[in-house]
Amino acid sequence: MSANFVALAYLLAAVLFILALKGLSSPVSAQRGNLFGMIGMAIAVLTTLTITQNVIYIILAIAVGGVIGAVVAKRIEMTAMPELVAAMHSLVGLAAVLIAVSAFYNPVAYGITQPSFFSQAKPTLYLSSRIELFIGAFIGAITFTGSIIAFGKLSGKLGNKSLRFGGQHWVNLLLGVAMIGFGIAFCITPAWTPFLIMLALALLLGVLLIMPIGGADMPVVVSMLNAYSGFAAAGIGFTLNNNMLIIAGALVGSSGTILSYIMCRAMNRSIINVIFGGFGEGVAAEDVGAAVQKTYRSGSAEDAAFLMSNADSVIIVPGYGLAVARAQHAINEMSTLLLAKGVKVRYAIHPVAGRMPGHMNVLLAEAEVPYEQVEEMDEINNEFADTDVVLVIGANDVVNPAAKTDPASPIYGMPILEAHKARTILVVKRSMAAGYAGLDNELFYLDKSMMIFGDAKKVVEDVIKSLQH
Image (cartoon, rainbow, N blue to C red; front, side, top):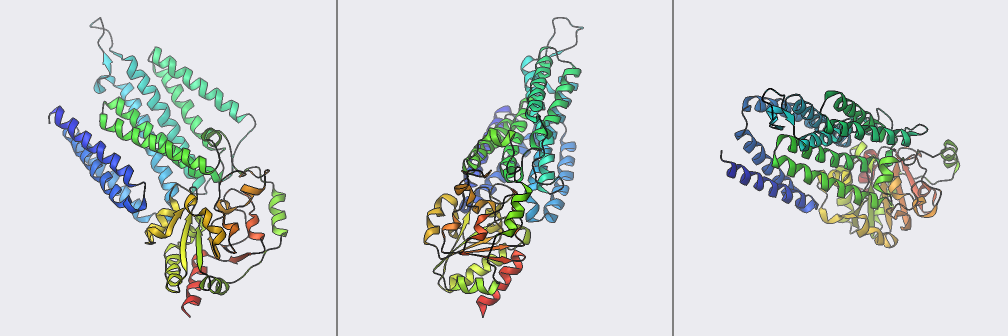
């Protein structure tokens, strides 16, 4: 295939990737965006197959990976999507590391050597290639181990608390400086020793950077790791001299960075604070104990059904508890019954609700909740004061009034869904336990709040039965 045709095909794929990102910016156009992305990737893969000499091996690898991916996708629950995303990011980082090692081991095969003045001399790497290998390898290594730790935290295998030790920031700084130092040494004199030491430091740094990050910051971490994986892919593209991979990686990296920035703004935090800090780890045990002693009002699903069916407007605030209980289909059925009774029903989505960006949007889309019922925080916050009933189902930190009232709270200043302004507040939870950030929620103790304890799906199903009678 001619070079011009390859360039044209890659350009078409790049345009489709850009259209895919644009489509994914809205639930209404998300399906179209996914379609553009799939077509673009198909064009990119097929074009790459025409310019390689290892077609059989690549097709075999695609087949094996495709089978594994299909099995995982079929078995994975929606509640496990965040950790699956983190695991996928780790594979991108690992690929970048392996390609960097392979390219350094056999640079001639990658065409990244410059001719020597002496015919008997060993070919040497271009300086630009050494820099590319250094950057691609350390970003890939940090992405790999950081994503593994994120997977462990999101899946609960490592807990969701911030894990830190005295002087950790100084240790991270020293490791970062040492990693860059050995990387520069590799760029000056390409040799295995500085390269491998640099790689080992980067792998360790990935662990130490993510371990101290607490549960409430994990959605931003997932977004940042997505950006890292994109930049790692772009690094692979430079090593392989593949313009398509460079463009795709840059798109993923830049969009992930922008999304992380938007999410940090929604949390009133800086990216530097998230990556190098913790969130919610300072909650003392006595605080939780004190929360148990506070007075709260509890009710039943029948009470909730009565209050919502007699309201003019209801706002539903979904959270991770809804995902765990797989209650999205039941909540849509309940909304349909309320709409049939003349109640105005909307869903309020916080940018960091759930365990990853867009988690709640995906769940509601899966349940075929109409797009026009779903509103983002900035769109709906002014509506809470005029709302009769707010149903908080499985959410905690994103509706915690302490973000506005308690300067001592770790989440003070974080924009929240202002559910506390509604006339009546219904909260569905399994218990009075603190949320993912480890913070008690004063919303539960307001006079106008009613706690409804139980599994979210079971509670909603009981509400449906009451509404049908």
